[in-house]
Image (cartoon, rainbow, N blue to C red):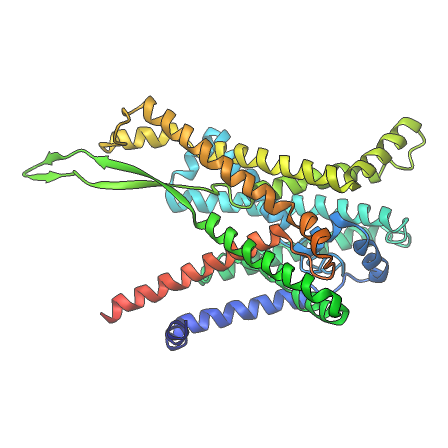
Length: 425
């Protein structure tokens, strides 16, 4: 570890890139504490303290939403736009053809994603303002004129675009993915305060609980690393053939199938589904129609039930893990490409049989990955009652994102160090 740190320090360009990325993350944290003018943030903090769904969204924004800052939406609209275009590329033939045009196609799709981010930020911004206003009994928008509302929407939309730009600047330095690092910074920014609150509240009776909490956290991190890096290697052989006067082929390699093929996308989708019904129900609780008001209140109460919340959350994560994997993993295309290149899986006939084998194998792998993601998602609901530690939230989702970002960043830095080793040789 020390030798690697010395290598990083000696490589001037890597050192400068890391310092540049750290400076941009500091800029993000400063922006997260600049509130939109004319908003009473004290009322908002009480709302976020008593609402679990809003607390989760606030955690991903690094407290920016609770402060009603100029970057309160974080990079959420940009992530939503990216997911939409990932799905559209697989559905719309023109976009699929565009994605296969190399750098030009990727740049055009990125441009469309940026453009879609703007209306999504406006819509999400207005929705959150209305939601927070209903949570504060209208105090948030009580004195807000139409012009002030428009100005507020423009400010928070510009804040999202600003973060999107920061993320692209970070990505260009090849020190991790920019958007992922911004989310990572938002998650870990609340850790010092949580530790401080824990140390203040700790007493002799809590020492054992804290020890259990720490053991569970370490086991969870190790399991996340294992599943994130886990792959099933499918053996692939290439037939020997003659090209000119040379024998080509006869190579044995493998096709890696990741255990967690979908990453954290299923959890993000599941969170969106779970948060949406109670958020919408908040608008109709005071409806003049009795059955609408009663149904809205029932919806809020059922999602507030921890058992229902955990079971529904788990099932949604498992469902979206299978759904997203089926969208991005195409065994038919893989089988066709292997057949065109003269490759085959030993013991499996090329073509449809290879496609069926890959599909069957992938479904078995995804089942293990999906169940793991579901357990990670509901981890806070299980660990909290066991340990009794409420000042630190062991969020499985935040741990999963944090570990994945750290692994990706370390790999990119290692790749740059390897390049310099070759240059020195």
